[in-house]
Length: 475
Image 1 (tube, rainbow, N blue to C red):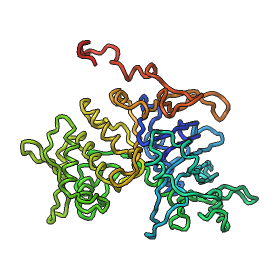
Image 2: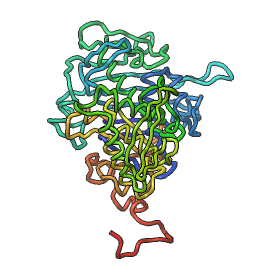
Image 3: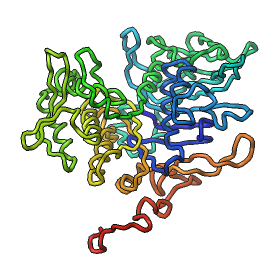
Image 4: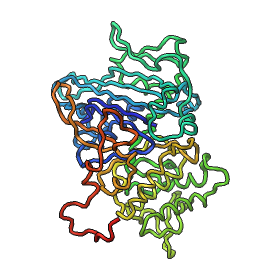
């Protein structure tokens, strides 16, 4: 669970600091940079798994496409000046992790702070691009006694916080940065604290983050941080992927683009070891069809997955009222996206952070309450302990739709807007800020906030609207 994000020098995030709860909605105008927040989170996830070069190439460039030039990732990256990106996260990591060899281990602490600073090295020859360099990397624990100051969103200390903030460490950092005569090194410290010598890794020659190199349970807390960051994903459900049939050899986990929808639902219904006692396939299908029936205009009698042994395929079918039976490929885009989220809701193994852009796309305005409630229900209930019936999931969405903003709990809302910031050069420039609603848990002395007056465009009909409800129907 990502509880805090600090970004400096990444795209238009000059100096961003934001806290997250189980569910967060970021609202802002088109082109203001809301997606760059997701890019920063996604970049961290890539860095936990890939090389610096691979991670930089997977993130959207300034054009919105994958980029081969790492300067796209830096604030004002094409001007000649010192280029640095600093990424800081506070996170709650899993209480048990599996390493690449199939062994399990428990981290010393589950509430951690990770700091990473990257620089830029210019190309060494013509017709080549520069590269990212590792300047600083640190991983430290947050004491259980300090957890209440860091977790400010509404939650139960007894049921939730005491269940997820575990462990105690008396030593120092798990990863630390040290400047030596030969250059900067990243020290890897064992979970035993002061026992044993740290293992130094030369930062200048590192082709990837040190955290991403930990694959076994020799360093269980570092591995837990890596696994947590690997679970941060951007969900971009594409109709073509949702409609693609699954073979028996395909993965049975829903991909971020929506592939393997049928195979995933079949696995959840028939052979999911995390299912609750007494549950069967019929009850899973019934819950999915019941939730899908929340969409007005869709008469759902049943949802099921058919296994064709001859063709070796899974096919998802929707049985409508009136005996019409439709395969997934015949459903509308909005219905398919809603159905995919219904399937995710039933999957207790699908945990971590989900970022979603404009979940209302393809949804009729009358169905906005249903889609927003479904997205909220995907997130963990922080009043209860996480378990298979309350998976440890976190959801962040962004939107520019007035209907979504109006339906959101103000406690969950952040307003994306360009505000004055001091640039690296010392001058004043404008960069993205995420501002909470006044009186919500994110506000505090000296911290900016917004009120209803700042979001009038979201709360009223547009000027010159041709159709309006009569006054006796309003409210």
